[in-house]
Length: 160
Image (tube, rainbow, N blue to C red; front, side):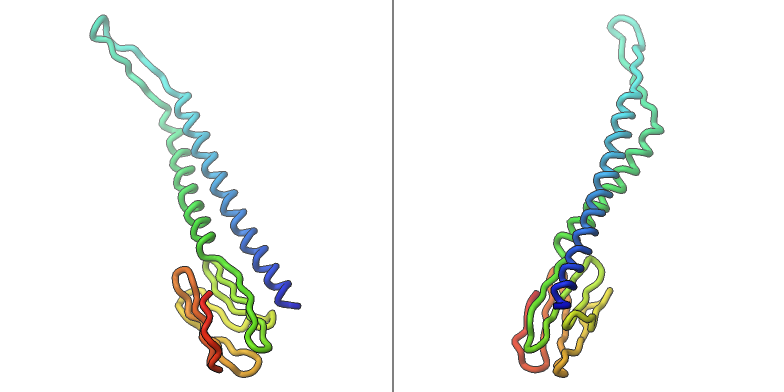
């Protein structure tokens, strides 16, 4: 039963991270839009010339441009992180013999839990090994959007 609680905890962690990323995106978008509105409202139009040689000279308060840049430069990475998180993060639980394996792939970390206990993981790199309770070794090879699990006891490999 530890694996069910673990799976709920990992899914809650992913959901919390996604909510924070979405809130950060909304905050930066609001900052960018607010400063863009303020920039437009600071517009001053001057008429220059006489008769047919009249033209308009438009000036803005350029101090508001800094807020627009902060909004855009914060919004773009937060939305990219959110999309990457939606593509990459997952929690999968499956049973191999007597062991229940929970595979967690976060935005940065990849971990393997056996019967609710962490047995292996990586933050960078492409593969790691973890032992099962019967002595079988499971090798986890991480790809861009998936993972491949191979077992030393002859059990068919699993693609997650």
